[in-house]
Length: 248
Image (cartoon, rainbow, N blue to C red; front, side, top):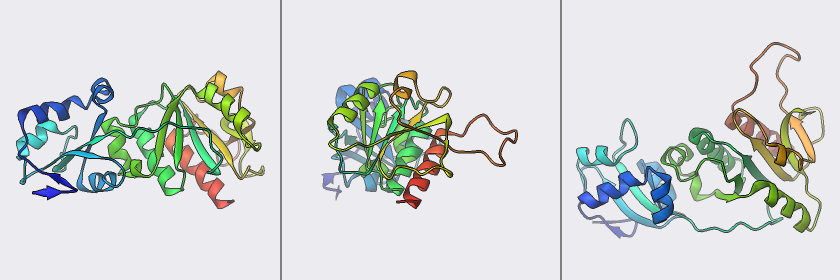
């Protein structure tokens, strides 16, 4: 049977071993492959990535074989292997907003951020080298297929931001979410630029902080009330992007 342009052959022991190995970044990098699960997620990713293998419970794999390959507690019955996208990011002025992530390490947070960018029409995310791998299966699952439309790039972030400032043909601000920043609801926000979100525990690194031109913060409510130390980074990203788009 041919689905999505490939022949669905009976799963083999070597393919089961391959899929299981892709839970690890080492093998994803060596092979240039990643795994996705669930009919919706797989269907979305076929729009942007080359499909290598497709396994479906009851068609070319048994329930036991799907469970052996799956990284989920409750396998969804569809598992696919895709080729990773080979994208080289260059400084561009085509998009009004680009998101930068500085040391976001939780796969669930990264996946949610990618999905949020998809919703708000942010097409590129530039990540520091210590940010979680966007092809981690947990990230892929959390994106729900948004990786098909959002490009994720890994760079030396301080060096990239320096290059961005030098090569940009027009001045575009670097907006950083900092506790000492200005209340983003009370200060006029730039209409374009780089929005930087920081690490879950430590925020934006000192090297990147020094390059921020517009520090902003999301105020708690009511003012000066005792509250949590900070917001989850994926939630904070959604709030910031929503405010930028509201004023777009």
